[in-house]
Length: 219
Length: 113
Image (cartoon, rainbow over all chains, first blue to last red; front, top):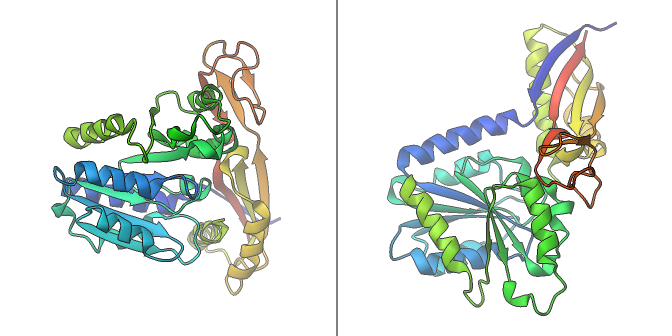
C-alpha cells in the first residue's frame, strides 16, 4: 500500500496567486480595470468602441485584447480612442489567464491610465475559470444568443459583477423571453448589475457608462 | 478547452508535494471535481499521459471523484439537486439560493512510493 500524502490544493491556485499580483499592480498604479467575457459575436468590441467614444475625452483608457489570432480587435480599440492597445494572441488557448495578462501589463505604463479594459477571448465557458486580477468582470450577453444561456452556462453568470445584455434593438424580431432570462440570472447572481442596451442604437448605454464612472471615481 | 494548462497545474502541484515528502514515484492522484466546475476528465487524462512522461509521475493513475451540485434555498432551507433548466427551489420556488457543493476542483491527495 502506497502512502497517501494529503494535498487539498485548488488546482487553479497558481493562476489565482498571479491574479492577486496583477491586482496589486493595478491598484498601485491607480487604474480601474474590467475583464469583458462573452461568446463570440456578442458585442464585446462594439461595447468597447461605444464606451471609448463616450469616455475618451474624460479618461485615459487602455485596452488589452485577447484573441486566438489577428490584431483586428485591438486595432478597433485604437481607432475608437484607446490611448494604448495591446493585443494578446493566445495561439489557440480559449481564454486569457493571469500569466498572459501580466505579460500585457508589462507593455503598458500603468500610471498613465484611469481605466483598463481587458477583452477576453470570445468564449462563454473557459474564461470564467481563470481570474485575471481585474477589479470587475463583466459578461456581455446578447439577444440572438437566446434566453437559455444562464441555465446552460451557470459558471459564467455566477462569477461576474455586471451583465450587459446587448442588441436589445433586436427584441422585436427574435424570440427571447427577457423574464425567463432574468430569472435564471437572478438565481445565479442576485446582486448582479444588469444593463440591457444596444451598441447599435445607443439605447441604454448611459446606465452602463454611469456604472463604470461610479466605480472609477470610488477607486 | 483549457485542459492542458489545468493538467500542467495538477502535475506541478503533485510534484511539489511528492518532492517535499521525498517520494520516488507518484502512483495515484485523487482529484475532486464538482459538477459545476466545467472540466472534462477524459481530456485531462489525455494530456496527463503526455505531460507526465519522464517525471516521477509517469504512469500514475488519475482518479476523479465527482461531486454533484447541491443547492440550498435561502427562503425555506430545502436542499436539492438543480435540474438543468431550473435552478429555483422545487419546494417554494424561491430564487435566493446558495451553492453548497459542486464548484470544487482540487487535488485532494496523492499516493506515492
